[in-house]
Image (cartoon, rainbow, N blue to C red):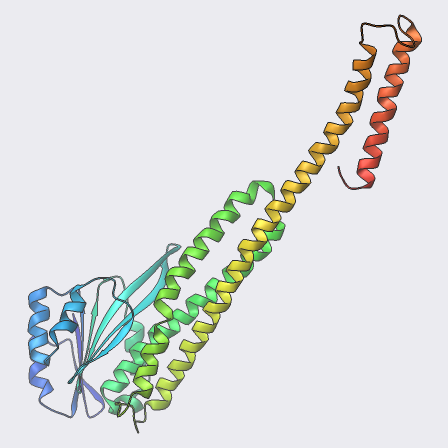
Length: 322
């Protein structure tokens, strides 16, 4: 657990017990942040009673894999977002549930490995905005989440471009590796899209809902900047989706082209082999034929086999069949 107390826009206290939150909420000049990791149901219920949280919002926290969303209640907001990162090459989304009241911001994480130190550094780096209270804290959190998503989609886009180059330079021995990389990239992009695309609606609701908390606030331009980053992430995801679809089609076209090349070469060699077989079969008949029983007949068959084989090979090479 981690806690912070701001009074009149200045950081006054840190890491105080969770039980003290209700004491500080009575003072309208204060803003409280509390961060919990996998709280017990009893602890979460006590926090809900202290902050007056709706039972459905508390129930959503206890349910895993919520869709990114914003729920608006009478005295608070409930927001679910996902911080994303790669851990050892594995895509790891981390759910963050957020309660927003008039004077308190509560974040609840399911992943203990998720580090919010960068969020705290962003808060400390903009003390001139701290007087905006909860809106300031919420902006720092959402800005960090959206920037992380933008960085990830840029990384995925770079990987897709590298894969596109590898697709045209691959050797037969690399075919399985390229296929595997393409599959993994499509899988990550699909999972990530389910997390990032709802952020447009979430941030848009904060910006545009009637009589919203941001109306007339100094923080409105900062939330608009977050929204712009969300739109950019969505646009990059759409272009990434198209690029991956094109890569898949290109891969299938390459496989068809290579199969045609193989079949063309096999057909050419089969034709070359078929002619000597026909000639030797003719000379192997059990009936008399020109040169039968004569030495010149044997040599004539060899010359005929060699001449026709060389001629067919030259013709096929000229037409790029071999």
